[in-house]
Length: 458
Image 1: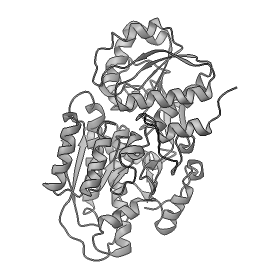
Image 2 (image 1 turned 90 degrees about the horizontal axis):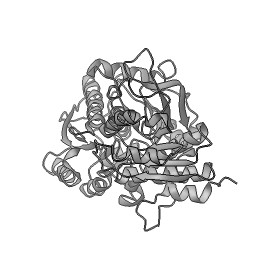
Image 3 (image 1 turned 30 degrees about the vertical axis):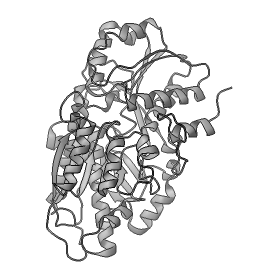
Image 4 (image 1 turned 45 degrees about the horizontal axis):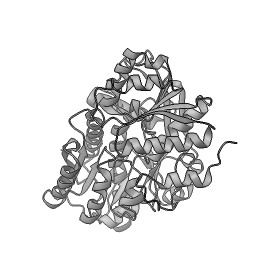
């Protein structure tokens, strides 16, 4: 079903021209079961369309990874119920556990293409996996839709001229920038900042972009305690007393998944939340039910600047309400942003395949599918997403919010009255901004954009 853009002004996202071009030819793609069957042109093969899905299936990160697989499976089941892609090719999925490590995952990607003959690679959670995987996917000429693995490094440095690789989720720099912008708007007098981040690409990216934005929005901020636990840490008692002793105004953290669940429960025992404010990029990115009722209210708890299942509300955005209902009916749980990203990715593929078929008939070549993914506008549960032709990055407005217990759910959710949404152009370097030239591998185009264009407070 094609709908007019009416929820968000895409001009504010800085991508109206691209979406307009796509909409002018075909309209905006709508994610979810079709209301009218697509009548394909030409002869369509009935062989399965094979996907290889990569995500965490074991370990603490499975609270993110399992919903990713469930979102993918739900979309595949819905599409297959309509006969498959173009009504003929049913989606089959093989999977691999990202917890096996980067080297193993890269080997699995090669196996998927060379032995399993997959048509599409999807998924990926970790910012450590995606930069290694993207160049291999290009080498294999394997169409790839990253549903996370959102590090700027992928398209800034590892795969600077992507052809086969696309990404649905918001870019990672927008995560730290969204959190910092929300902090500056909510608590403009904070000065002393403590940090707690996983010691790998994502944590360092969050630290860099949060600090840059804070430096440009609030004068006189300083880091008083910086802590780098390893990814997968479950014992935070060596860090919590140190953070409290530094007497910060706020603790900023990018700890995620099962690590965050372990942290907040231990922090409660130390009374940490009574002593400082707290802001996170991704605390509520887990399976929503993984957060207990004991979680404090009033904390700024991000969802990776992406989708949270209660926002936008169903009365404002039916695409979200329908997705949540179908996901809950299928899995008896609520979706997180990983579920929505994986779900949306398959529908983006479906739309590109249908558009390419309309142009050339029969089953389209990868080149034709790629051409339709470039510049595609998607009406997703999270809102409107635009895939930029120049860097294959998906862009959508970013979201964060504050924790609150409400009667409707047995776990805390975003406070309906305290959800913050930012136009993507305000928290992300524009498409086409020059790639970073610094030898510092943690620098990004977004960081250069902030330094070059944002004024500092007087």
